[in-house]
Every structure is written in structure tokens, then in C-alpha cells.
Length: 238
Image 1: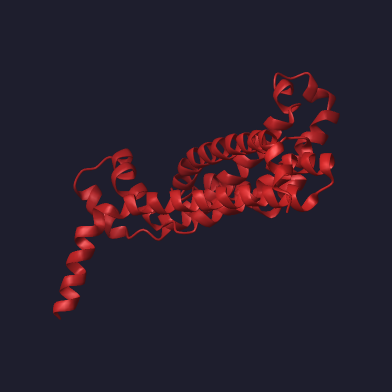
Image 2: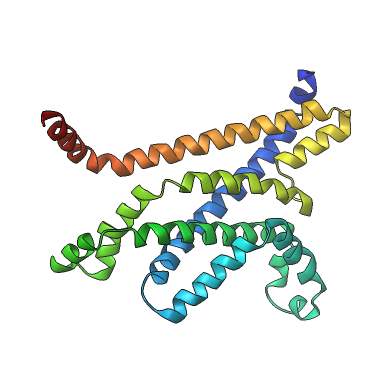
């Protein structure tokens, strides 16, 4: 492996890494912010609201990311009525189209995960909180959401899945890590060095996200540590 090829164009990879990190952070942040109220509304008992959210979730999960990006980026440009709206300056940009698609998909998958965690929540905890006089917002903030976030062990898998999906952004002219690898390969005709370096950067990002999620999970479980220690001591004594 010729390291000089990678070191000579390290700035290209860093720029691709920067663009990828921006897309990932914005998509996950907006997707999570949107998913929390949608998951709560889906479990609220309103049939129409539940049906609409379920249709949205299944529409995003049942269609490939690549098809969604192609449809948004290429098809919207052929709709003359779309060009007359205030949305056209945003949707004509590949960056916004990719961001829009990934925000929706992250929101859909996260909504499904949070909904399952809320449904699995013990009803006794909610009834006890209501008996104590908690309002709905306080109940969500202090009981439901903390317990839910402790139980979403599959969220780290969702983060890794979506991170790998960001490779598709390069097909609509967005300069990301994969795009950087393609440029280096076109300059030196060295696919091994170019793509291997891109794979290493993705590996570092994936491991960093996994460590971050595990750190957050430990922090969320910290209030339960005294209780878990007491249960462990009780089991040991018996």
C-alpha cells in the first residue's frame, strides 16, 4: 500500500469527512427530535393519528434510500409547478435533498424503536405518576422518556445502519468520504489505497458513534445503579 497517495491528498479526505459528519449530525438530531413526539402520538390512542404515523413509517422503511433520493433530486426538477414555489431553491440542491431524505428515514426508524419501548413500559409506573398528580408533560419528561431511552438498545444499530446509508449521497453529486475516495482513485488509479482509506474513516466514525451511544446509555442507567447493587446484594445473601 502506497501511503504517500493518501497523505498527499489528506485534505480531500478531511473535506469529505467534514461533509459526512455535518450530514450525519444534522440528520440524527432532527430525526430524533421529530421521532419523540411522533412516538408519543402513535401510542396516544387516537386511531387517525396512529394510522397516519404508521403510514409514514412504513413508507420510509419499505422503500430503498437510493430510490427516495433519486425521486426527490431528479423527479422534483421535472415538475414545473414545483419550480414556481418557494421550496424550489432548497429542493434543487443535492445537499438539501439528501438531508431531507435522511432526516425522514431516521425519524421513521427511530419512531418505530421509541414506540416499541413506550408500549413495553409498565403501566404501573404511569398510574403511580398520575396518582402523584403529575401532568402529562411532566409524566413524559420524568417517567416515560427516561425509561424509554434506557431500553432502546437497538438505537445504536439504527445509527450504524444510517451511517452506512450515507454512502449513497455520493451518487447525487455530494462530496462525502466515498466521493473523496473516488477523486483520489481518479487521480492516481489506485483503488486499493483510495477506497481502503475511505473504509478506515467509516470504521472510525462507526466505532466512535458506538462508544458515544454506550456512554450515554451508562449515563441514563446511572440513577438505577444503587437499586441494581441492592438487588445484587439481596440475591447474593439468599
